[in-house]
Image 1 (cartoon, rainbow, N blue to C red):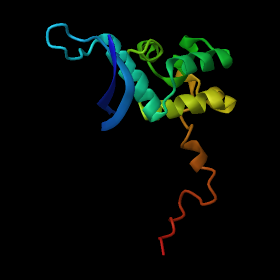
Image 2 (cartoon, rainbow, N blue to C red):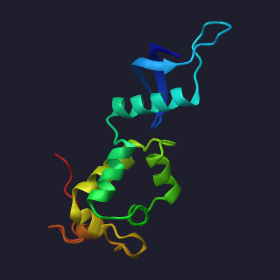
Image 3 (spheres, rainbow, N blue to C red):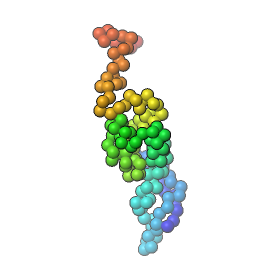
Image 4 (cartoon, one colour):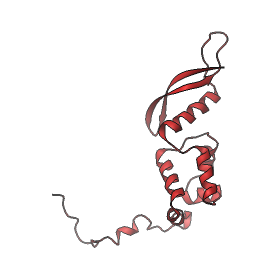
Length: 146
């Protein structure tokens, strides 16, 4: 095993992200002396990518679920994601997209969001129903920009 500085280029959210991992721990091939990328190295790169992108870590997600007093099953139902998706994030098999990271942060930060997002029984007007109460009536034309 050897530690080395590693310049990574990783695709995430349809973008290529370049960053350096100062001390990536890699086995060294006995025959050629080159570092070998292993599954463990992939996990280290995933941790570094999360850090580089400021995404919630699996431990932070797990802690937030406990803090709000919900089960993982309740969280997936309210967010409308699959159990395998949340499990993948928690077990470091997958890294959540930025949009889901934003939703997770909002969901955990605001009790009203947890109340509003209630799975299959959610109000179909949520997010669009508030437009009805806008100052303008539905029939009034939208002013043109000047």
